[in-house]
Image 1 (cartoon, rainbow, N blue to C red):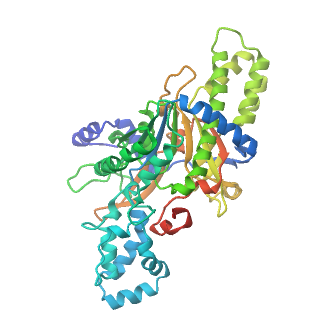
Image 2: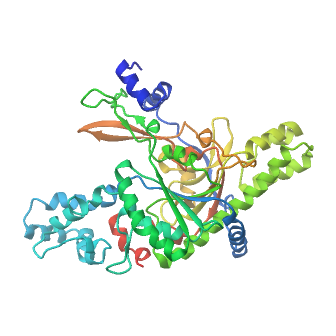
Image 3: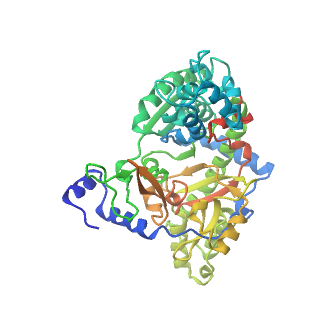
Length: 506
């Protein structure tokens, strides 16, 4: 691909290597290879299913040992809430140019929108509206979605009112996440660390929200709460192309770059100096009455991680020490990876001598670790936990989106349909090695995974590339464990109507 000097200067200013730009354009032309799923991870085969005794054990492991580690609560929170209000935007398009009587008639024929207006006084943002008796439905929707009203269509989810405890006490997801995190992320030094990735446009809004709620929670709990923020880095942006796979240009002739998606956040995660990192999405929150079960299973996942990490550190210290490790001891390590981690161990290991086996064990275990909660899929099977074969033939546990699977292949479609669980984005990570040094997380990304989608800019269609998802390809080469967690730990808000569900009533 030929670029002008002006293009090269623009690319250089962003801190992106020209080889990386050419690699992205290659993927626009060829597409990303589909995930080579070999079988779903299922209970007892890739997914840990815990007994009551197991749960109690891991709870105790975490409660006794977790506070000794530096824990950070990490929440991606940069996206705007526009998709949450898709139905309201559609309603506004239909209502804003017709008479008040015609508006009422249209709403009567739309059950979802009709129910929204009936329940409007129950919504947690109702008290922030200024409805006059003469206000039409279209004007109410404008107050909610646009400025100078609430401007919810362009605000991040983290700053919207999600839960109404009373007419005066209404909480945002940001506040609910802080209140939940104080129950399991604080150290023995009585300090809680929380990090959010946000859009530069929304930083001041988050800072204002933190200034309003954090001192109150500190006073209630006696904890010192440290909230930090970061942005997606410009060097993780990706180039956009037109439908002919040539660089898409702005009206002034400059190249168009777009944010690289959630996967770009691996660099933000890599910048954190922590022992353990708990990750979940900003919109997966619960009011006080339902936080107990969520905290319990966060601690259980943390206990699993601490126990597995302890064992792996012990093994690596033996393997890298001066004393010779017997082959029978190494065989026990292989059995641990197979039986505890759920790893598919290559058959060729049986014929290897002790020196080769030792090197394989060090390579296999000396990497970041993540324990991911998985929820039973009670609807149609979709993306979730699978065993995936790499180009070299190595099979590993991965989180795979449905869009990464070649559903035109009957064999892969059959595997997808056998999936029993889905990924609610509920994970805890260990990012230090057995020597206490921080892993360089970008070394464990699979660059051959990603997503291509069609978008529009200035009325023109373009193709956009998203980097490997944070819990998909960006963590592809981590040691991964899956554990079943109850569906009660998963209560996302994907549409505005979800705010009326039972799990979001305090």
